[in-house]
Length: 224
Image 1 (cartoon, rainbow, N blue to C red):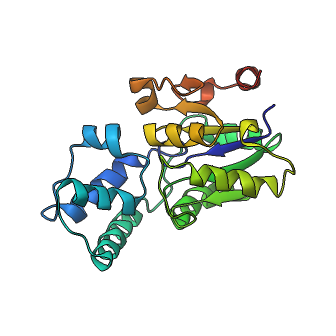
Image 2 (image 1 turned 120 degrees about the vertical axis):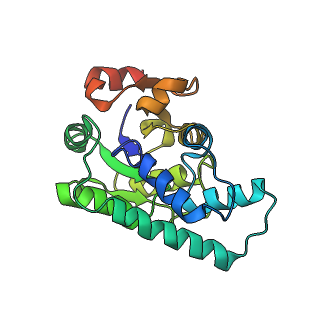
């Protein structure tokens, strides 16, 4: 039985992934080889900022001191914040789905984004109070595809929904790393968005173009 829904943020709630990529390019140009946008979406989406930067340095065989990592992540954070100033549109069906779901199930977020970035998207629309739990990049020491974030989200939601188990949670994801993490945590997974449509993740329990296509009947069928 479905008791909780845990959303990713970037690429699920708002189309922010291209902005993350452009911010990274500006910060890392001339510092370390940066993948093409296509490669970024195929291989790296779902990683935290720090994990992405460390991965690029490792792939280039370059050393990376913790202080330098912090500087690069902070610079990228500032550029990204500038890019999302103003009200960034949410993806189709997202706000309606969240408001409808909040009346029936516990809601949480498990994202590699920073908490302030997540809150920045949700607060202007009055959606922030609808989420009982936010697990962000600062919440766990490891990035997706590691399932630690989803496991933590389930444990925290269980404090508000006693007895909640991972197999009673639906993760809404758009990336390979996210789908892998949620499945490893023992959850059902709904893959959503153009990126998920393009690679049709076999490990996801269902795949849709956007949340306008999801109704209660579809959700119930995932938990039969």
